[in-house]
Length: 133
Length: 68
Image 1 (tube, each protein chain N blue to C red):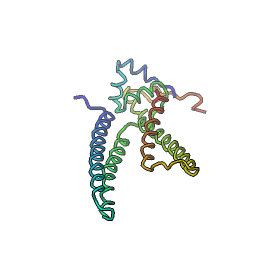
Image 2 (image 1 turned 90 degrees about the horizontal axis):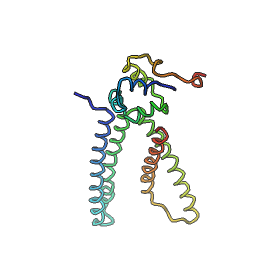
Image 3 (image 1 turned 180 degrees about the horizontal axis):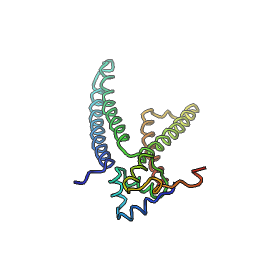
Image 4 (image 1 turned 30 degrees about the horizontal axis):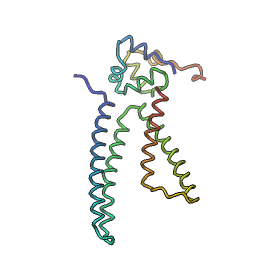
């Protein structure tokens, strides 16, 4: 019987588990936001409820870390370069926005920072793959 | 680093995917190795040499520049 390539298997498990975690995140987020909206402003339970979507995000992080340890050395190298690119570009962009805000530019929501990091990581991966083709 | 991976693979009539499966790496890794754009770790280099039943220096040859 042909044994499955460990990288292919790791990718398959990663996709499945990440989709499950992000699916749970979406459901929990919708429920949490709806619930918080109907609770009175002074209810301390609001803080606990609004933080519940962080749990599936932590699970997604663990799934990602497991995937990164399972893939081969070349894929890890590509991701390392992409993380460096993401860290540097996100740092420069957020710093630039910070300077602009000092001059009166509208405030940028902090929640956009992780999205920017993920976008730049993806872009960094595309650029790294192109370089090694 | 120069290597004979593409030639050795052709001699065994393996596709990049087949070689990747035998080494437990991705096809992209094989492509990067064959084009000389990625130098493998010592462990992977030994694994490749072992798969072709060769010595590591028969598969991988450092350039003069790398030996300086």
